Image (cartoon, rainbow, N blue to C red; front, side):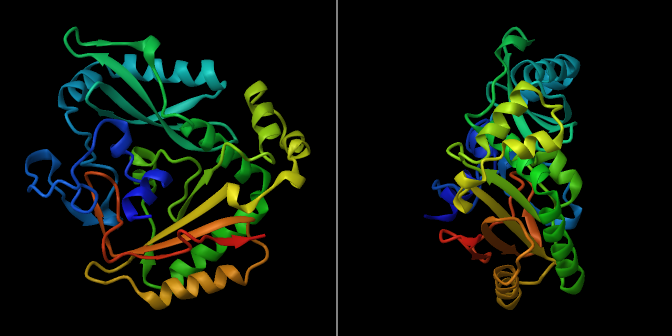
Length: 307
């Protein structure tokens, strides 16, 4: 499986799905040079906060969505409350070909980032509040990932502590929180990793169903619903992505090998399937993607399974 398909599956580069194919040097089969607002531009990951993110042919909708920002926000918040009983905070609105893609963050203890799409009648400049949708399975996966983090908070804290130490001891960094909020939208996310889940996961399904009934259910009751006998590591993927700290540094193979070996030897971190990516220091600000030809990967397609 090539990198393009990998990141579509993961959710990185959501612009490919949320409003038309943004032109990207490594992801676009069209070899013609791209100019104007869709031309690739790269910035240091430490400086990237989501500015410059665009969706193809979204200029008109972007203007309308900004003018009617209150209407867009209200429509999105109503959508999540009515369908998922979940309150969300709107971080960013980006015009797409037919409307606006809205990046949100849940406000409750089940924490995740995701997106919704608000259709806009461009000729009438009208927000279609009753037509809000999300990408198939995206919000559901985000909720499941947030539930996993809540259920196994201690194990994820162990992973967080390890990654914090690794970053402090080596010349690597993660994404900024502003970038995660403004153009993340992949589920449970930290500067160093994001979680993706499978709809066929039998272990988390009773927990997910209970969440839809009552998102304010106590953690102890969520834990009681977790069907541990049905757990399979392949159903939760923990995707670690780091960047070199210095601007002109190439990804270091020794570092990604050390990270891989360390994870394989750890016992207190969350069970699941791990993938690792180490990029250089630059990120494509148009799509929020750091993956390039020189990126190093481990655990894909054969994930590192922690059981």
